[in-house]
Length: 169
View 1 (cartoon, helix red, strand yellow):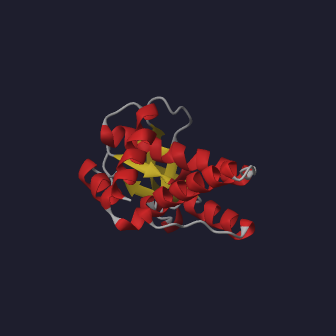
View 2 (tube, rainbow, N blue to C red; view 1 turned 45 degrees about the vertical axis):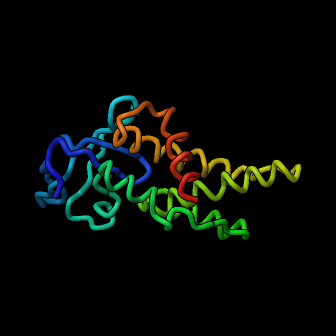
């Protein structure tokens, strides 16, 4: 269970701090909620996550440690090409992936559209708007967490990750 002060990744909202546990009376029942607040610089509201709601709790993930991140970036799993040629299927996978918290698939799915974007440009074709939007959202989520894990400025994270992935491919 998460404790006050823990930093967690909450679905597509990114890194939040657990501020407290709060009990509320709802329909005559006393329910407990985790109160989350986005980390500084992200803005946004506070989130109340009901402890009794498995679907809501499944969107919470502990932050990676630096060692876990390095191990992840050195793994073959993030190097697999995961481009999905069918646009409708790709959009569905993007929607599911953004809130999943699966960093391996998220890194892999950021890497594949980047490669596809370069290929499209080389062929004189445009990159799909849905792919561009996914790439922006996925990079924001990853940068949000990884800048804290790596203790670096968010703008440095992308190039750091790319160097690591290029070195390992």
